[in-house]
Length: 320
Figure 1 (spheres, rainbow, N blue to C red):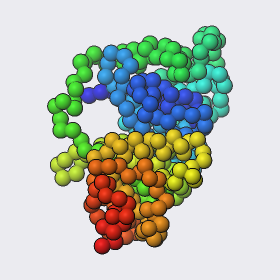
Figure 2 (figure 1 turned 45 degrees about the vertical axis):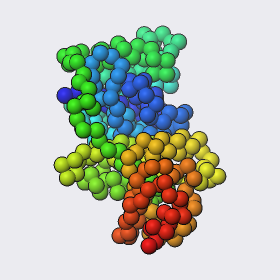
Figure 3 (figure 1 turned 90 degrees about the horizontal axis):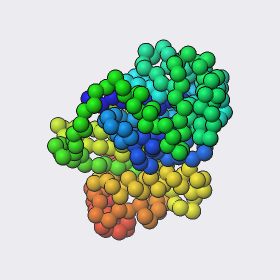
Figure 4 (figure 1 turned 30 degrees about the horizontal axis):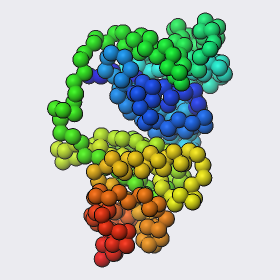
């Protein structure tokens, strides 16, 4: 079984950049904005010779007791519970922060193996930049640069030194390929709540605030002895209403997930008129050839159709 490496740290220390480096992907949205990542994000590690899983988490605020930051902290703690190794990421340029000490104390209580990772150390003396972090009492810090890829190979070799080398088996070639089911729709219509209900656990953050989900989160799901992958996506609005850079990245991720999906579940708010709901979605939302399931939150209406038909026909099918 693959070991699981969980990335933990306060906001904006470079966890998502490190996740993308280790998975050799661009799956995690990266921008110089604190608190960008919110849900747990899983990926297969591809840096190094040994197979492993990587989990990106949101900025950890363990002392916050309410609001979305508290929900993010719960997601982080759930990820730590699943971890074989915790990579505690800190910012070498900002130095040791009071919040780093709080997080270190919280992680120490979990009993997990913890590796202290000092990020953003490019162009700096590793001995001097890591010196103050010895105060955390978590062993010798590993100095890296996720942005430039410096010393990541050494980090992974050190993290996985206790695990024997096993030639990775291409599971996809031996197992039935999982159908991809994307959950899409406007902000705050209940997409994340629907996924949590299907899974029977709080896998993704569901919060009464538009724009809570920012990334596309892939979750494996078993139902009726069949395997599926659910995709929780960020809410979509008309392009003219999208202003923030973060939301633009989220829209791109959502459209990519819809393009990859075999089935798209378009979640609608039953309290809004259907024609209004359809008009405010971007034209590029409709993927040719995909099968669509249209549930209404707070309602019991369902229909299955194809996006080969126009949105007018979809409207007619739904209302018939």
